[in-house]
Image (cartoon, rainbow, N blue to C red; front, side, top):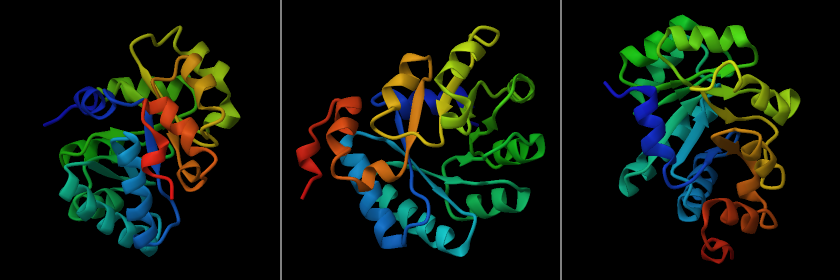
Length: 209
């Protein structure tokens, strides 16, 4: 079974950016996922807190399979959602918080789990489960300095800054020690595409219209 660290290394070797596509139709989701992949963003998350999200994830997984790209399920807050994510073909799961039973269920289903953390206690629970890649959420509220502070007692943990991140503030979180930043609506903003391209060393002109 793939470990969280192995998934991390494979997913983020080319770009320190992850895409979160929440609230879009299946067609919009596929279009924005394609834009992300063309920018060099390998990893796409589609939250499944409602039926629209389930349909969008289904479409994104199918599109990703044609390109050999990774698509995961977000807002996986229960074992039931873990099972649904697995049935839909998600490659990994993401949650806004840290629940040991959800993390364990996801790992048992062969899907690396990215739990949300906002305290040292959360990080310790993740480490006890063998998870050393966690989601700092909500990053814009915690602040970039929080990541710097947490890396002191937890130097082996890698943080994915999520929540309120865009192409304009992403570099401050990376500079503070975040290994990855997760962006959403920035992919739907033509003005931010060049900044995203700079983060991924890609030419934004390939995805502009």
